[in-house]
Amino acid sequence: MTHKNLLLIFLFITSVMFSQETIQSFSLQDAIDYALEHNRTAKNASRDIEAAKQQKWETTATGLPQISADIGYQNFLKQQVQVIPAIFFGGTPGEFAEVTFGTRQNISTTATLSQKLFDGSYLVGLQSAKVFLEISKNAKVKTDLEVRKAVINAYGNVLLAEQSILILERNKVVLEKNLNELTKIYENGLEEEESVEQLQITLSGVESSLSNTMRLKTLAYQMLNITIGLDVYHKTKLTDTLENLTAKNMSLELLNTKPSIESNIDYLIAKNDKKAKKLLLKLEKSKALPTLNAFINGGYSSFSDRFTFTEKDQRWFGSSLVGVNMSIPIFSSLGRSAATQRAKINLSKSEDDLIETEQKLQLQIASAKSDYQFAVEDYDNKKQNLSLAERIEQKNQIKFFEGIASSFDLRQAQTQLYSAQQEYLQAMLDVINKKAALETVLNTINN
Image 1 (cartoon, rainbow, N blue to C red):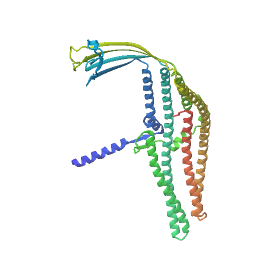
Image 2: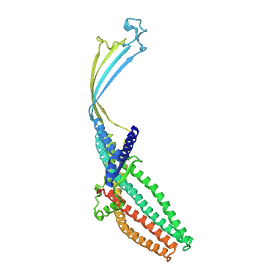
Image 3: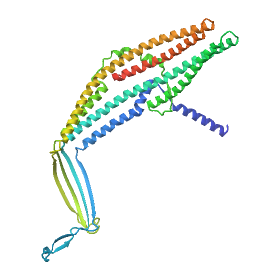
């Protein structure tokens, strides 16, 4: 075997292995689990929690001891001249002597330790940071619920497209067979040309729908990839089927679930908003309180007409200071009062929003239960309709080729069958999606 053949075999094996590695198979639950970890929105929600934790510590740290240091160097290119009465130096009264104070260069270093003793806004800030962390965690839960529902919808759309393609291809094969047989009958003078044209119109419509559905299938896969956090062009394979998922989701026990509005994530988010508005009101009120801070510092300074600060015999003079500073707000031209009133208004709005959220949730839950129950009932109805449409179409085929039914009757039966097929597929998808919507609003996740 030549080196060239060995190289070709190696490249072939490598390409096969690479293609196998790039295809990922997902059941619906696998896709959901993968999305909760890799979906961009879900990842950002997790990052928001980490950012909230850092912000909480950032707020806490402002009330802990702070140490700062300052180093200053000055070099007078031209020193400032002062004039003093010359009599101080034994001169003539009324005359002034020009003198220069200090040295041309100096360096000073200072370290300061400061501690906040009392600040009302700081106490409110600590509480706000805790609430902000709760908001971020609740937002993560809400995001995960929405991501889960989006994955179910995207996964179902792929299965719908795949199943539609299989049915359309089967319909196309049957139509092509019928058209071929009818063409031969027409060529023998035993059938009208209109009958052939009717079947050609039906076949053309099926072929057009098939081409469009194949394009939609590609887009559905790309949407699924984006939703679960993969590259849009990644090769993905689904292991669940539309029939299996429909059977798994045909459970009306969920309709008997008694919702707990107080534990619903949307209610908790609205409740957190009210808590945040209450803290903002508290913050505005705290701005009318005095603030008290303490500090202690120490430093060294050195002076010279030349840059001799690095020499050993250069003299340095130390200094130290301790103090307490109180800032008392007295009058703000009613600015603080206006801010407080605005915070009260926002708090009142959040209280009404909380009540409205509770009422909307009750309505959403009732609506979602109704939609899910209708989807299950509609599925049974569409399944029966499909069975009837299949029998009607088969009878009309037999009647048509026996010369009992017209080509118009056959086309009408075929159109009715194709419509029943798509309605049945959509009914299966609705069962899956409506249950996902109900689970989302109930915050009930059944794997």
